[in-house]
Image 1: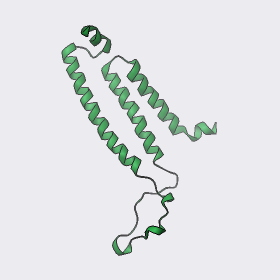
Image 2: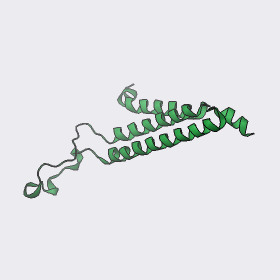
Image 3: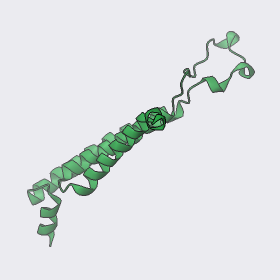
Length: 127
């Protein structure tokens, strides 16, 4: 039981990923598929942000500048949080918003042409 409670955040991310995956695969409405894709992406972003933190860690900003700078050999990197996952996830959020915008624009064009956003109806009209 301790294993499950100790990694509670990971179980939440897995549940979110499965909800998003289910929406992308099982739903026939194109807008619902996009929402599922966003839920899936949010779960991945939260996962990466959570693995970039550590208990008792501090931000990697060194006190002092110029003549009062800290000597590099006196820095213990084990006390600092890795900022790279957070920076990469900021980029992923921007890309995700852009992809969502383009996907919604395409759904609008599909709706104007086929008068529906249901995948089955569009495929039936194409046949």
